[in-house]
Amino acid sequence: MNRLELIGISKQYPGVRANDGIHLKVAPGQIHAILGENGAGKSTLMKIIYGAVRQDAGQLAWNGREVQVFSPAQARALGISMVYQHFSLFETLTAAENIWLGLDQSLSLAEVTEQTRRVSATYGLHVDPVRPVHTLSVGERQRVEIVRALLTKPQLLILDEPTSVLTPQAVESLFVTLRQLSAEGCSILYISHKLHEIRALCHRCTVLRGGRVVGEVDPRQESNASLSRLMIGADAPALTARVGLAGAPVLRVAGLDLPQQDPFGITLQGVSLEVRAGEIVGVAGVSGNGQQELLAALSGEDPRAAAGSIQLFDQDIARASPRRRRAAGLHFVPEERLGRGAVPTLSLAMNTLLTRTEAVSRSGWIRSGQARQLAAKLIDSFRVKAPGPDAPARTLSGGNLQKFIVGREIDAAPKLLIIAQPTWGVDVGAAAQIRGELLRLRNQGCALLVFSEELDELFELCERLHVIAQGRLSPTLRVGQTTREQIGEWMSGLWPVTGSAEVADAQA
Image: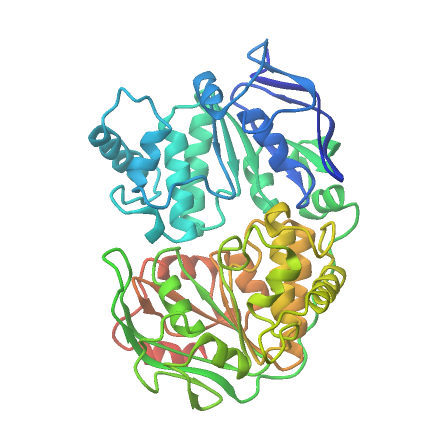
């Protein structure tokens, strides 16, 4: 008997058929991957299973019995838990309070706090239960979601991109946990764009394209290339080859010390780095180790840096505003798409105005027609799946919104691009497209600083790497002279403290 069976599930939205007659079977203890491009219908299907969305047609069978799931609370009562790609947390509450909301209310908050500490320690997913969610990074919020789901002791666990913010060692630890849950009879629906993870972990893989099932395979018998072809209907585009050598320094950060702004922040200590024209430098690290603070200092959101500690083309910008930095050629893509990279309720056309001023007159009037033209250009140039320039940002899938935001900044012809999590939650085809655009930008002489928790991405894109841990930045490492294992160790702050300059020189 199957744990879950979907029969002819369909869902129609205005202008798009998200799910079209989908059939799916998940056995007890099975780890079943759902693979597909952004916009293929994966998230809609998972929300139907979890009761957050109602299907237009089709049936769900749970443990051999047809059920109607009208709400997430009913799904949790059945034994279904879900970790969303876009989080469902109340920012003003603590991590423990958010977790408590989804649990049996017979438990006290103190009991939930203790269980949160125990489960997070057991699974290697560090969560401070008393921290308010608004102080957490994207990666830390994801850990809260995972721990909340595990505390419900589910029969079916739905995971949407669960490893995007974990070190290689933490991924292996999570896989051990998931295999243990599977051995205990828990079924797992696993959504990931990391094909090697699906091949290593999952027993079955259902592939969606355009809202329909186009194949079901044993991923252990497939290659990355064959899974990619099945998902996008073609081979992923090849990346642009390296052209030329790095030029003159564009960004210099020297001895940046920045005290934490709130009790849960990270203090930056002696951060130093350099990025040259025509070079991509990466910053690896587990989320919550100072990335947000360093990004805020570099983008101008936090103007407290000491004079001279941040220089752009040898000009001091430590106290400069974001607008002045953009005028000097620095553009920035934040890690949080909705809320910081784009205003959810505004149209794509109006969202271009966040960092682009072409459609704003000197007197401050918005030329809406020009804004719509720019948005249409970005939609076309970066192959964004959207109804048009007037579509609200929140209606786009995560990957398509990411392509639009990245495209908005690349199209501005920056001299320095600082980008955080460039392909987080993005499918193989879109990830290859974004990385290709970054490499093309580098080949045109732009300097790029890339923050990412995905090591494969950093090794694919970068010439040099730093690791950030506990507010400190490691010596630089040449990508060709290091390993993922070494980077994973350094993510714990275990690089040499004495003689660090010698390490940097040896690796440079």
